[in-house]
Length: 230
Length: 237
Image 1 (cartoon, rainbow over the protein chains, first blue to last red):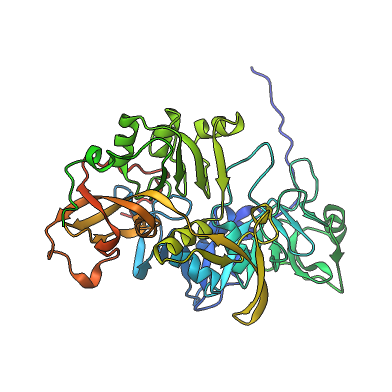
Image 2 (image 1 turned 90 degrees about the vertical axis):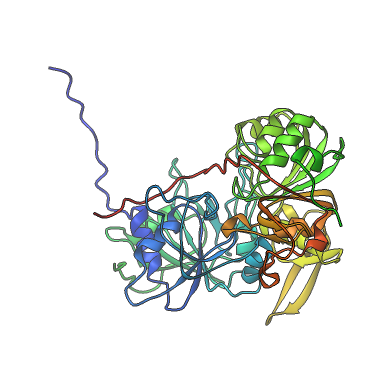
């Protein structure tokens, strides 16, 4: 007989990335034009509520992004901003990159969902560079955060070392200033106002004390905080 | 009017060491594969390349990087390329990272004959360092904008789906991306196309780039059209 390996399971209930996406999807309203960033934001498309019809914008030049193609039907000329093969939908339109960012800059896109490495309590966001380590670039993130009317950030509340990523001030080079309006993390939902991170909802099984302990920036907790509903 | 050239080699014959190039494409989608191969073969050096991405290790602009033909890259996103990262960290390659919309608009401005544009992208970030800013009341709010210069490129190299002998171009799907913008912005613009047709064959109502912007055109061949992230779903039986 070989050795028995005992695995230690973390029984704490926190949201996984699909649940974060599902909660963000509740913010979608019928008729919205929406830009979804790479990572968790992309998953939001899987949870669009019934009766809500939205048009997804892909900043490489497409409105009306459809699902992945069927196997064997992938087309190298048809990709999204994450360079994944995708499809068009009835009513889709194609345009160049200047027009794509033109509609973003002009405020035509109703909602932008993106990931972040850090967010500050004044709405600053950092998600493009780790000096000396990651030099991939900002892509369209700086354009999006500078112009979007409504930005929701999907992010992990703490890093692997357990340190808060919701800060007083970003330690990484910022992508944009005072632009994030809402955060959905594995611990809860937060609005960013002049007072800082205002706790609106708690993830199932998460306590206010835990949120307080894991939030480095100004945190506002007022009254009874409801538990997130799915 | 003689815009049609025989080959990629003929199209890039006068691209010289130290030239400033624009190269169309987003990732590997809509890149001028034939011209890149010709530039690699020609071996020109010290190039400044304005392109949204830098290819991958063994395709696209990555092929030029491998041969150390590029002195400077101006791009918005340069992941997916280990050789690029190595040259950057060792200081062999100069890189200017700029927001994607700014890159597109600086190409557009050149083609529209405007020296500068104002954009809010990058205000308050590293991108704004050393740049002039102005505050405008526009679109219902007061906001700070960065002044960004139009690009001036010696050559713009683009890939289109269809083109005619007058240089008119039509792009396909998301392979359009930066191509029509860069086509407008080159002092010399070179277009490689999948289908080259006689003037009169394309409906003027559906031309994306009018031929006035295009100086050389040729029919490309052997397109690989690599896919970076092949994502698909299973067909339900």
